[in-house]
Amino acid sequence: MIQKRFHFISGLPRSGSTLLSAILNQNPRFHAGVTSPVWSLVSAALPKMGGSSEFASFFDTDRRRAILRGLFESYYSDRQEAVILDTNRTWTSRLPLLMDLYPEMRCICLVRSIPEILESFDRIIRRNPLQVPRGTGVGAGQTIYSRVETMMNSESGVVGLAWSSLRDAWFGDHASRLIVISYSRLTSDPAGTMKGLYDALGEMPFVHDFDHIAYAQDEYDVSLGMPGLHTIRPKVSAKSHAPTLPPDLIGRYAEANFWDRHRTTGAGPVVI
Image 1 (tube, rainbow, N blue to C red):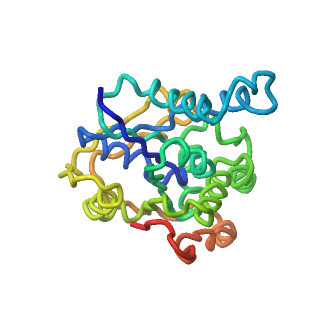
Image 2 (cartoon, rainbow, N blue to C red):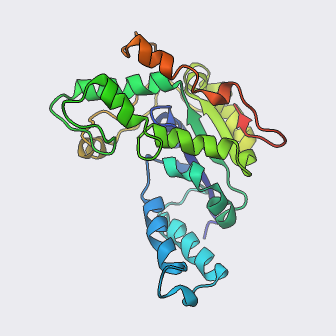
């Protein structure tokens, strides 16, 4: 049986995690995908083994750890690849847990300008006027201002919660486990980005074909009410769009890219 290595993909939405997964899947050693349900399984199991449960006395630390690792390993038991990358925006707020389960793990975080992320979501919402997106908190009939306010909520917003979780990890005790990749670097220099990523992961380099990338999750996207959410172009390239957010909203979040300015002291994140 192959002893799998587990790493994690997290960071900000609409920042290239699907593209990165598609690129990595060209390498036969790697398996990556869109958001997985493993965190939901872990978050459901933890309370049943903790102090608030009537069954807490049946679990010591080793048993809890074995059960949680078993969720990851059972979910991916059909995969033959040696390196598994599980994707969830929540992982940046759960680094102590991941470090306990997999001490050698790295958490790959994709980042992008917050106004660009908001515009990317808004383009998809506007492109599908007969749909009400699920998972964003955005409702029918909202203005751009109310949509942005909803998405940027730090407790529940699809962008704000991910941003807060990443900031927590960036300044936290396990910041050195982060590998941060910007969307602009990934799309403008995919070869250099992948070389840096393989180096950071301690993996042998692999020759990718950046002109023939294949990935789609049409059924999942439709279920979210956002057809095309995870559809990627076959050729990796940087693409610019004219701004669609009102200037005051762009200004409000123009300074939100803390990864461009702040570095933690000591062993901080690897920025590619």
